[in-house]
Image (cartoon, rainbow, N blue to C red):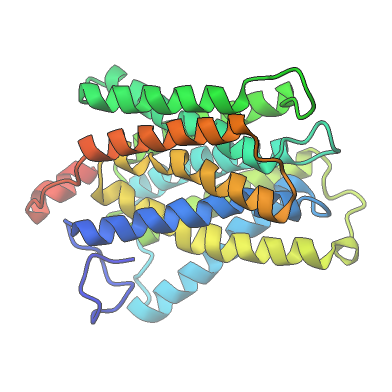
Length: 330
């Protein structure tokens, strides 16, 4: 994505402001593609080691994006200073190793212990609430309607995952794992706009994915995931799911998310966590036979209402001059 006209190179350095149409394009990509990745993760870990698959996903995506940037912009395309590199690595560890890695772990394992993909997406909806709390602790003062929208979305989340005493009870360990992952993602999202990152979000994405892949790979090796692992035993379904996660989830959606963090209010960007569950639940019902009950429909309606409130109160940033925008990113 780029804030330049369509006639310009799609990987040109982004402008310091973005039109609302571009912001909404990025949001829709994140809404739909990330909503589908929860089911993709579930299929991938059927026969792939969980953290190993996540490391492979981000390493491959980083390699492809780095190659494209190098070919389009020349030898200096990925040049950053040490501070920018360290910042990008920190954000990558928080977002990908902590946030995504823990979700992958929660969705892996035998039936009854593995968290269903739809439920995992619903639990990640705590991200906007956590981000608003971080903003408040940092001295920001979000609008009262932003708090109201986040609270309404959280009510919908509770309705969706509230135990009913029947079959389909949410595994506690898996649920807590995802909540910890959501906390890591929230901290990473919050910090990304407050520390000195690479000015180009595409370059930042490369280093974030490399850092995330390295940490995930080290942890996977420490957990013994590679002992006895044979690629020949991986099913075609899992390989296809991993390829989809690399392209749709990492190259397209994650890059769009990083771009949005530089061009839109964080509370608006975070609304993806409310829309993703609806997409994940729908795909789970259509492709994995996950039941859609009255409880799911009610909770989904409340979540959508929360999204509408937050979106209507969090407007895109106004255009600013280049110096001010650069200062804001640092």
